Length: 100
Image (cartoon, rainbow, N blue to C red; front, side, top):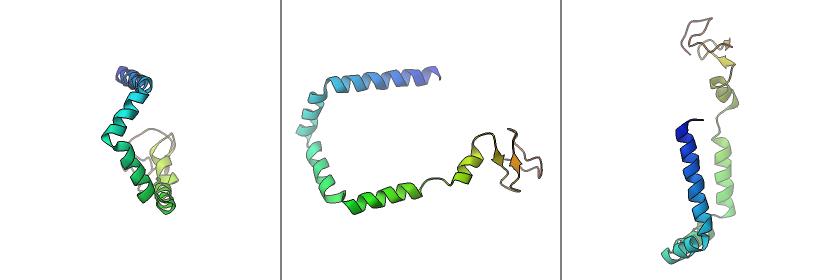
């Protein structure tokens, strides 16, 4: 883990602690700005059961196919040209010589 990632994690945790400590202040501020009323309106008008079902179905369908996801990561990969199984971390296929 790099130093930048550690700093980001610490900053996010500090911000979350401040928000939790001042939760009532944040809620009252959101109420004054009208954000909570707008969220209630959006929930009642636009987030019906049908809309949520369609959103969930689209999220399921937008997942990468398992073969393509497995082919790009891990120790075992496949050549995109000849479909040969490649076990090493090389940049070229040992069968056809194409770049991976």
